[in-house]
Length: 159
Image 1 (tube, rainbow, N blue to C red):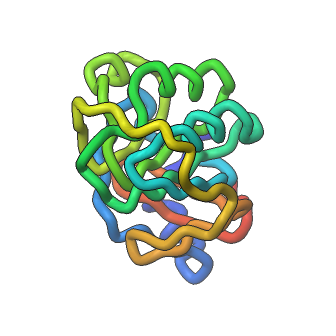
Image 2 (cartoon, rainbow, N blue to C red):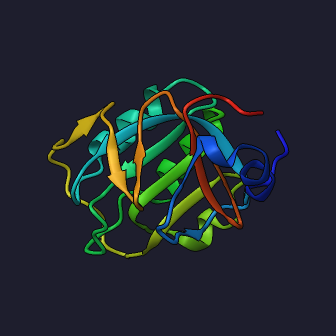
């Protein structure tokens, strides 16, 4: 699937929400899109791993980590699940680690930054709920499109 968020904005601006939160791209795949699946955690990545292993192929996992920079919510091991399961990618409102390894993987990964510290393993959080960060709502089943110019969200599949 080839697209540009700028073109989507030109053609569908009245249908789109535009994420205002800046993210850094860490994987080789710079443009990715898919139906949204969600998880909300705070410094605990057990539900992130579970979600990566269970969401449908082609989905884009949105992780609300509360914007925490205390620890990483994903590293190279979890990033490899994205590739192996043919997921669209992951957007993390928090940090990742193993960024040099992830940079060599053909996956879509956006995050706020990096932290070398691994997360807790308490299995605390929620899945499949509407999230709110970046001045947009991330609703399961809606569609997100991400590239070098930003992230846009639509209630329906546009391409």
